[in-house]
Amino acid sequence: MRAESLRALDSTNWAELIAAVAKSQDRAAFSTLFAYFAPRVKTFMRRSGVSEASADELAQETLLAVWRKAALFDPASAGASSWIFTIARNMRIDALRRELRGSAHETSDIDAEFQVDDSPQPDSNLASAQLETRVRAALAELSEEQMCVVELSFYEEKAHGEIAQILQIPLGTVKSRLRLAMKRLRNVLGESS
Amino acid sequence: MTIRHHPSDELLTAFAAGTLDQGQHVAIATHLVRCSHCRGWMHSVEHVGGKILADLSPTAMSRDAFSRVEARFNEPINAAKPAAISVPTDLDDVAGLPAFMRQYRAGSWKWIAPRVHLRPIRLPHANNTRVFLLKSGPGTKMLEHTHTGVEMTCVLSGSFSHEGGHFGPGDFDLGDQTMDHQVLVDPGEDCICLVAMQGDLRLNGLVGRLVQPFVRM
Image: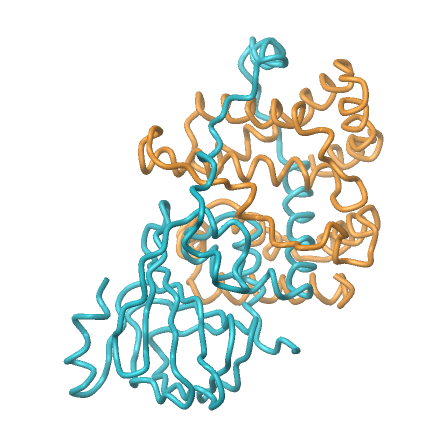
């Protein structure tokens, strides 16, 4: 499964498709992006505990935001899939907050909450394509168990306790696996990241 | 000034994954605006997120999903954005905060102990975490205290030390139940920190018990 999607990812240049959407509102390019990412964003939402209907809606919202914000995508500072990930992540936070507080209540600007770079230049001296390749290589070096806790830590608040329950391993083991996984990632990514 | 104390990789990962409570999110963001090193790591984690997303197995979308999105291409972008931040904002005068903090309301400074003042920040979506600015006069020896939950501190100006080291602007400190802090503020200037606190602060000793009611917000 993983090898298959990797091939798909390699054979399509998502960044070019996003650029085409930005430049000429290219519907064909958008439909390719939609076909690949919408069903995966939906899985991401489902795993985050969102209902089937809401997950579908949030995946639609995410891809609509890809269409609308395509011009803001900067291939030099983010990879295409990491950019779409950040949009999906922010949609999920927004949905969660609306659920907790009722929709009419106060809203926060979630995009702004992640803007911590004061300079327009990316901090990393690594080009994003290079970083993407390195991240992929680094993840490939993790053991299946380590990858599993890294993946799960993207889904839930109070993640560690729940991961422990899901995997039926002690909380301490979750924490040490995650710590080890992060350490290995750091080593592979180096201090340049 | 060099930043020496950083949030753990796990906390930075939770930040980039978007799973932190808003209060804790703010504390980490306050560190990140000052720390390019941690920003680099945050971007790496976002790449990890992108890779995880791209590798997920697909879940079939509803049949009309694409046409529904297409139908909205030309829809005016609704102004669901927060109403333009009311001006002037409460937190304009506080240096070292992330820009987005200006959208939030802050209370006024309250006296909580000799030479120690606290100013609550009202976050609309913080669940379990209270966020406030804490200002301590130069040379203040803070009341000995322990926590019932996790407490995150990011120094905005001035500096202090405790058993864990010396903390200056941008430095991040994490306290929990296992720690018994005795904080000493450096001489020379006020030390202003942003604090995100879960649970309650327990002050030790008689003076602590006397001021305890004021610390509860």
